[in-house]
Amino acid sequence: MKVLVVDFGGTRVKWGLFVNEDLERKGTIGSRYIQNVKDFRSFISQFNFERLVLGFAGMVNDGIVIHAPNLPRWEGLNLYDEFKEYFPIIENDANLFILGEYHFGVAKNHKVAVGITLGTGVGGGIVINGKLLRGKNGLAGELGHICIDINGPPCNCGSYGCAESFLGEVYFIERVGRIFVREGESPPSDMKMLREKALMGSSLAKRMWDEYGKYLGILIANISSVFDPNVIVLGGGVSNAYDLFKKSMFEEIKRRKVAYRYETVVLKSSLEDSALYGGFYLANLL
Ligand SMILES: [Zn+2]
Image 1 (cartoon, protein in one colour):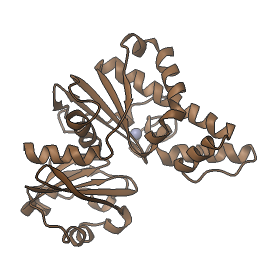
Image 2 (image 1 turned 90 degrees about the vertical axis):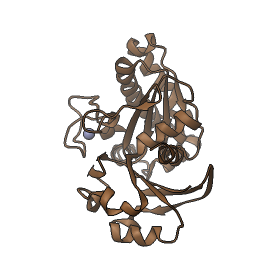
Image 3 (image 1 turned 135 degrees about the horizontal axis):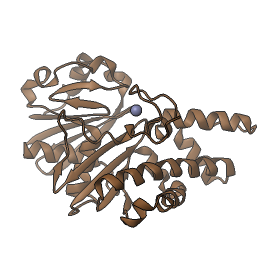
């Protein structure tokens, strides 16, 4: 079977074409080029495939994108109908990520595995005994919208103080920018640049990564209390800076003894295309 998996991230869209067991071709495209279904159709017309899997950074249920802050024109459409000739599977991108890790990556053979994707936003997915935890409306696992500060800033979901409103790239880089300006340094434009600054020795950039790890540690301590997971896997573009934030992250987990008692194992994803593989797994299962 030929399966096209498309992972709609916040700013970048990754795609992969699987032929039987192999990821034969893959690539990325800017999400601005596929803001609506019509553009997307013309994009996928170049591929020869039988089954389509779409992963969205946002809330999806029963083929309908309920909340996708980066793709507002996709919200409310019934994508099962829209792409019915391809027997589509519509899934949350972080769910695809943890399924990929569970079947092909570092979460393999773990009973309870939690995935956290760190990028433009903060996504979450939970696998228990090989099955995704979906909840009543298919919206379970929105770990980025766990509140970690009652006085925190507004979040795009409508709530306040969510983990995403601290750790999401847009939010974090804005706060970092203000602090850099206050300290008389030129601010980084994105997390990649913040990482480079830290690697080049900027003590202010390193401090910012410590802060990032601290907030992530609070989120992980909360998740541990709820799921007592065997493993928590970190993915998404920002997880590339793992070495810069892991120290403060583990300190914070330890400080909040709950997670410490559970001996939470936190690993960085080692699979480059976890979400694509998760989509491939679903296409062969359903
Ligand atoms: Zn939120």
